[in-house]
Image (cartoon, rainbow, N blue to C red):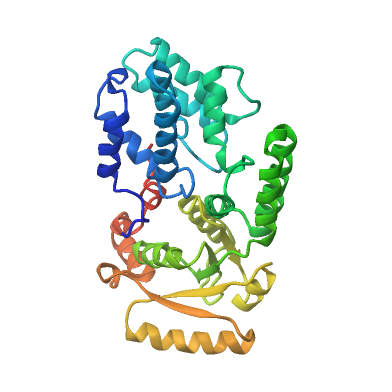
Length: 357
């Protein structure tokens, strides 16, 4: 599968090994786990670029033991990151303790304190905590260039792409208001971010299908679509020609949402045109094709769609050659003959996002 333009994990390991005070770790091989965590695919802002930028700023801003404390804090502060959950700071501090050769070491303890404070409920009282706050929240500070702030807002939007656009826009605006009130020195920054949010018109695609199941070929098309669009909504339709019990449909859709945990998964029971009308933003429809036979059917699909909903954009994306033989019907057939035989073609949440348990 094609990766985003993040540094390869091994390259990131090499970079981290040059700056990490490895004597604080039980084993230098733990750097590979750390790099893998930072390279998870749900990270569009809290990923390698953010980490490397923070490391550079720490190297310029501190020296001696202070630098070692801040480097450990930088390397671990978002090592556990789930945009859909809470407690990332506690889990990240615990990961550092579990990796530490001696968790009672003063440098490790201070780094854990900085990490625990990085939920930024308040500005920390300690000198190192305040410095880390300034470095970690730069994009919301008054001194951040507008271009960098725009890149930040777009990346945060992608990290929260699992939320419907109206919900995201409302909650993001509320967060920015709260942040500006909590930290008056950031009021100009949060005001600019709010203006950027108000003007944001993200490139959004809808990828419809039955996805029964969502397999490697679907994932290939989804990842290619994400190179062109900032958000891809997976829209699972209900095929009324198939006599599937409501309970079975509900279970399948719940499994699809769990599998695509960091994407927006919507279910629509009627026409795709009606679902597109219900969205509060312009969208393009993405369709996957495997061969010429698929393309003929897709041309008919696009004709019907545009007759039902004029001027609906449709783009076709071919899945990668190694998955052209994979189809949901073939997987179901395999499963009917031998339960589990089709599992190799159905990616897990961990495989989709490169998540580290």
